[in-house]
Structure formats: C-alpha cells, structure tokens
Amino acid sequence: MKTKITELLLIEHPIIQGGMQWLSRAEFVASVSNAGGLGIISAATFPSKKELIEEIRRTRELTDKPFGVNITILPGVGQKDKAIQYFEAVIEENVLVVETGRSPESFVPELKKAGVKLIHKVPSIRFAKKAESIGADAVIIVGYECGGHPGMDDVTSLVLTPKAADTLSIPVISGGGFADARGLIAALALGAEGVVMGTRFLATTDCLAHPKFKEWMIQAEETDTVIIERSIQNTARVMKNVTAEKVLEMEARGATMEEILKVIGSGVRRRCYIEGDLDGGTISMGQCVGLIYDIKSIKDLITNIITESEIILDRLQNIRR
Ligand SMILES: Cc1cc2nc3c(=O)[nH]c(=O)nc-3n(C[C@H](O)[C@H](O)[C@H](O)COP(=O)(O)O)c2cc1C
Image 1 (cartoon, rainbow, N blue to C red):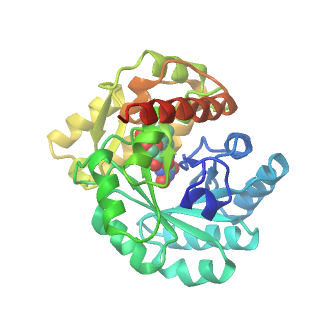
Image 2 (image 1 turned 135 degrees about the vertical axis):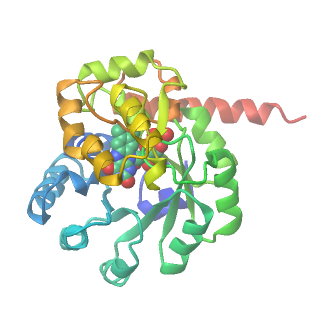
C-alpha cells in the first residue's frame, strides 16, 4: 500500500505501533519495523538520555528500517528537563520520527532543523489544528475507543477521523479501535493515511508482557475496559480490574489528585506487566481487545492484516454495479 504516511515515514505498510511505556522496547519495536510498519520506542521507559540512547542503538542493531521514539511531555517538576534530554537523544541519534503527546511546540524548531518527522498525537480536532499550526508533519487522532488517553470529549474514531481529514492539510493517522484489516481499510476509507495500533500489538509473542496478560486479552470482551481519571481531567481507558474499580470509587468520593496518583503510579504498572499481576495496577487497554482472538507474532499479525486488506479491497471492488 502506498499512502502519504508510507511515503513520509519511508515504510512499507501504513501501520504504526503507538509508543507504550515499559513495553515498546527494542526487540518489539524492531519486529514492527522489520514487518514493514513503524515501531516506536517509549522514551518514558528510560530514566535519562543515556539509557534512551542505548535503547535506540540496540534497536538499530535489530533493524535497518525506520523507527520512532514517543516523547510525552508531562506536567510536573523536572518533566520538561527530562523531555529536553529525550529530544536531544532523538536528534543526536538521527531517529527519523518522533511521536509526541502534549504540546511539543517549543521543540519544533530543533526537530525541523535536524530533519526529524514530528507526529503529534491528539484526542480532539482543536488539538489537531494546533498541531498543524505549530508545524507537525502528521497528526495521530485517537478516538474514545483507544487504550491510553482518549481525551475528555468522548468522540469516537469513526467521527474524529473524517473530521480531522476534512479539517487538516497534513496527513491524518487514525488510532483507537483498530485491530485488523477491516479497521485499516475503514480508516483509509474515512480519510486517514494510516493507523496507529497499541492494544492489538500487546497480544503478540514479541510483547514482553506476562503470558497471563495475553490470555486475559483473548478472553476479554469489548466491554472489559473502563474510563478512569475523569475527575482529574486525565481520562484513561484501562482494563476493568480491581485497581480500576478502586480508582473509580476514590473519584466518586472526591479523592484528590495526589491520592489517585499514588494508586496509578507507572512504576507499579511495570511490575504488573512483568509478573502478570492482573489486578495490581491500572493497565491501558482499548475496546478493540474484544476483537483479538489469538496471540501471534508481530510479523504474522502485520502480514495477515495486509493480505486480508487485499481481500477486502477486492470484495469492495465487486460490490460496484
Ligand atoms: C498498554 C498500553 C500502554 C500505552 N502507553 C502509552 C504511552 O506510554 N504513551 C503514549 O503516548 N501512548 C500510550 N498508549 C497509547 C498507544 O500508543 C495508542 O495511541 C493507543 O493504544 C491506540 O489505541 P488502541 O489501543 O485502540 O490501539 C498505550 C496504550 C496501551 C494499550
């Protein structure tokens, strides 16, 4: 497939793996890129520039294809300095693509000068317009279905994707709810130039999460996720588990942000992934978990999506009178 995104990012298929803290490590990222998609390392996994550079170099040993780095500029003391270090790593190591969350505005001139392609991830049209205005090369728009942060407006990918395509001049990548060839073709029909998938990539043999997670995913229904953190303006779609229920209870009784943050700390998540503790933390998970029926390698996943896309395109061709 050839789209504006395959051309911009120099990839074979318009399939991008969204950055996932603790999980999108070198082996995983290289598997996506070697399969013709774009793998993305999550900078937040690493304490500083030095460790991120090591991971970028490790990824490069495993693939000669393009890959990216996700940098989310979090609020809070010291976070901006951390982001500066991550951006320096990306520029110094000549990484082709950076996927950002929250406004990367102050970093845009340096990224442009270094020739880094900036893809900014947003959950709404107003943020997408802002991303275009500050010079993003493409926008990822994520809908209400997505794992991670779907924003505060509760608008689905089915509406956000065509609206973004109508509104922007830069290419749109659609995220949230995409797990198979039907999703990819639907996204392209809606005006996207590619898809971002997070949840689907978790149920692969290449993902380092404990087998218990993957088994849970195979059993899970599309109703087994829940939105938390609305009370602190930071909605997150996560697995419906004991910790998510606890957070919802805390929010209902008006707990403070500090109290909530203690329960949802990202360090806890790492242990959950590695040890297979399904209830110990809040784990990002999209509604498309209900569309995942098997655990396969990333290579097989991407190959199947592309093969089935061809079949769908033929079928659609044949419904024309
Ligand atoms: C387990 C998990 C962890 C994630 N971690 C991050 C992250 O650290 N940074 C980020 O920008 N997005 C993160 N995301 C969001 C993904 O990059 C992607 O935007 C999203 O998963 C797309 O929606 P989908 O889950 O329906 O495929 C995460 C998603 C999942 C499922």
